[in-house]
View: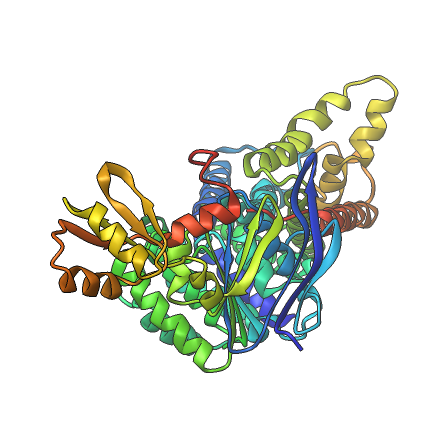
Length: 300
Length: 249
């Protein structure tokens, strides 16, 4: 059985169809990146999965059961939404302990988690003074209270500095290695590229791509851009060798089906002068924009 | 359920709001009981001085109501409703835990409030040579009715806070209805008397057995049952509304 199963899920808010017939699954031990531009319906999907909003149609289940029907919700699923919502006047420790009490988890475990997410020193301060990164880490501690088998994280990298993002990546890898299923949303593909095993890309509430990360990376394609005074001669040499060459900007050429090393060997063999030799495949962002069409709409 | 109640009690006492509201209530009670005991004069037709001053503990009533209103509405204001519902996904259970926790808080607040009123007023009366003895029956009437009011007003507050999600709006609705709207409606000819008798304010006055205007009121037990009915209705509607609501923040 899948750890998470979303099937034909739709959610309408007034005139807006926020999620439109969405289906995907997450298996134990996998990290699934849930991607889409802001407003694509990611948070709505996660909230439906967690029993916070009612689907208009379809279903979203955890280990085959609706979230509200789970016998031990905190031991089954840990979730972070909105960077951990906090009462500004309550300390992080009291926030975590109040939830731990409801979950039947000891204060000792709550304190241990505060140390794990490196909040030990700030735990007794009023949460209103916390940075976004600290709130995210406290949210993560909340999610881990019941030692859950499934983790659901909404934009967990928001507000984290580069070290924090790296820490999060290693942390999630470790948790997935223990056999947990992890669903992590992001509006930046590059953020989950090094973490996720699979990706689900949605746009305007609909699924536009579901693939393994490796398959998605393969779509980037190869290619080399070469500039310099002798590109015309290099074009003849490469085409003689069966390569497909396109003219680029400023007299440069684009070689679609050769690696940089292969082109370099031709250059060395024939003593061609070049001023530049760079990989010219699509970036991950290009792939993402192509899938979601969000490059054309301007910043959201 | 006991662990959920423990969680709610911890939430309640770990913000300054709770401390502020409790201290404000106790400060007003101390003032009323202290000044009343030091300055009031009592004629033969007045209630016994001891009873009159013990009733100052009833000043805690609106404060217990507001604490109840804040139970759910504060969770929506700061978004903590999300982690709360992730921990306790069954919304009725969460609201029931809040009802119990705020009932307990109302009870404790009441014991401290009436205790404070008595502790301040009675020695001052004695020093003035006035008897503070109100008799067991009257003391029981004021205390039992007063505590019941605080518990049931807290429950009404929890219900209103679950129905009106906006925190400030919920406080305004609860206090405004009780303190402003009902007294205005009571001034309407014909129906006014019924509103005064069977409205929230009438039920509170009857339950707490205040010595003012007692002739137009229900008996204490009938008033208590009416207030209990109000609390049950508000709690049930609050649970029903919360169960339907999409929690998006």
